[in-house]
Length: 168
Image 1: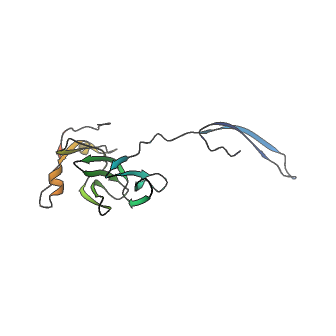
Image 2: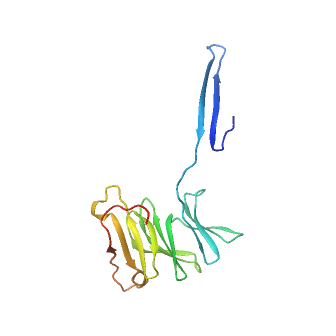
Image 3: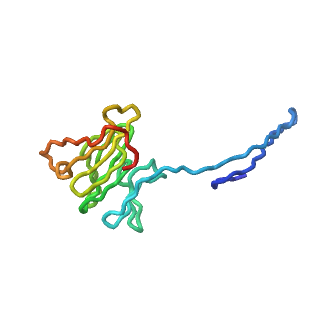
């Protein structure tokens, strides 16, 4: 019947052929929406977001042009002192990234498995790890932003809690 919008629809299917008995079946079709939270951030005059029409990859929109940025899948974004940081989780890698709008390039600053949320107080980035079978890895961590940007610094995240966490 062409139903594509969210809702419930009564559907009747009839199958017939001259050599067979006609078969008719009625059912209710329910179309629902996904309640998945997607990452969106306004930064440097553009909107950056997960494009659900293209694999949830990172895109930007400046009010006129929609632009593919990278194959990163940003699940959480933090804007700190004019810089954009985000967590990207893909099948093969996961980490905290920085984004440079002048070159449209991202850089992985720290590999982090199963990180999900990113917050900042201006000095630190806070993130949580919620692995299905994470054991000791689960918890909330923080890492100093200046260490992430210093190529010489040894980056050692500090674990603040040792349990699975929900929303921070």
